[in-house]
Amino acid sequence: MNAVVDLPKDHLSSVGKNIPIYKERGQREVFCGLTGIIWLHRKIQDAFFLVVGSRTCAHLVQSAAGVMIFAEPRFATAIIDDRDLAGIADAHEELDRVVKSLLTRRPDIKMLFLVGSCPSEVIKLDLSRAAQRLNKEFLNQCRILSYSGSGIETTFTQGEDACLASLVNEIPKPVMAEEKNLLVVGCLPDVVEDQFQRLFNKLGIARVSFFPPKNSQQKIEIHSNTQYLLAQPFLAETARLIEERGAKRISAPFPFGIEGTSAWLKAAANQWGVSAQKFDEVTQPKIERAQKALARYIPMLESKRISFFPDSQLEIPLARFLSQECGMKVLEIGTPYLHKQHLEVELDLLPENSRIVEGQDVEKQLDRCRADKPDIVVCGLGLANPLEAEGITTKWSIELVFSPVHGYEQAADLAELFARPLNRSMKLAA
Ligand code: SF4
Image 1 (spheres, rainbow, N blue to C red):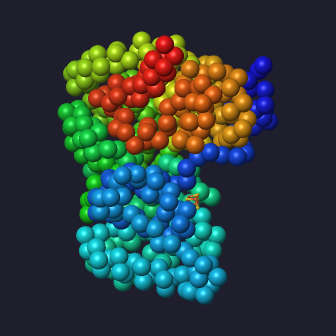
Image 2: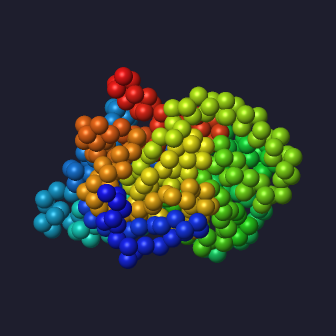
Image 3: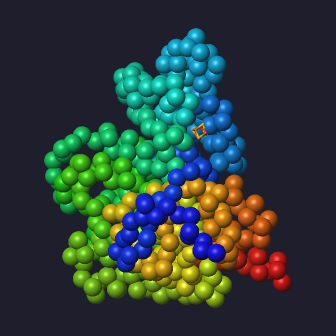
């Protein structure tokens, strides 16, 4: 059986090496953008995320956050109830009341995000207007912003894109050019951010900052002398707004694995005129350590066949890392959305026989997966257990977003995330 036979050829396009990109539309098995709150609230330490949504949204955020809800949370849901839906209560008044009591109780909150959901969109609750109104009232206490994390508009990591875009939107344009600086864009765990900061500084790139910042008071520098590096592949809108303010993107693969990290750092180093000798001096010890750590996992991964279901947009860079550095064979790379420009270098590094599918029709994809019989499938929680029951080894894609996986020091940890389930299934089979 030809596994790709049902993919619509009319939407076929291709990239660099003539790798076909198929487009598929249909039933989807993905998270909505609200999930982004889980890692965003950990990053921006004085921010609070108030979802304006239904009980479904509250359940989603709570179950995604798992055990963290027992600590003092910096996210919550203002539930739209029947009275709001029926127009009996003025939803704006209700929202003002909730925000006021929240900010009175929690003066430590310096930035409040009103996060839109499917229900708030359907009843056309204008959160940007609400944010403007509340901003006036809390002028010296807290900045209030809004973005949508609804399932109608956003898929999983696109929630981060929408959040960061709302932050960039606050920066006036055009802005005066200042001294050349490097901006690293995309939420990274603090430990990874600190490692990159040290590497850039050792390379002689002193003016480097990370976006989003660790706290709301930190100034974000974007002007026509800013060069920015994307640390995540799902930031289409944020990148567009950053460029509207004059900054230029440094084209690079994403910093996954040793090769990806080196090429990512090198792309910035070239813009700062760092010599090849200096670059090697700084990176070589890190590369050697990372190679040693990664070598442990290669025998478990080499020649194993992998398929990705669409989830986070990390699929293409991860497929590149696994094929280029771990010797895995990539069958299908599903991605919810493909930004060709941001991924151009990644696409060039993929093996020629890769099959990329943008969008999803889950039943058809499952049929292809069963026909392909991959050794491991990367998919969401909803598909993982049913596939395991069919004898297919799976890796939960959500872990790839929640764990520190960028950079040299995490290259082996990233490989281990795939080696672990393969190892477990081998043990079970034995
Ligand atoms: S925003 Fe939409 S998709 Fe997400 S939990 Fe709420 S209702 Fe569901």
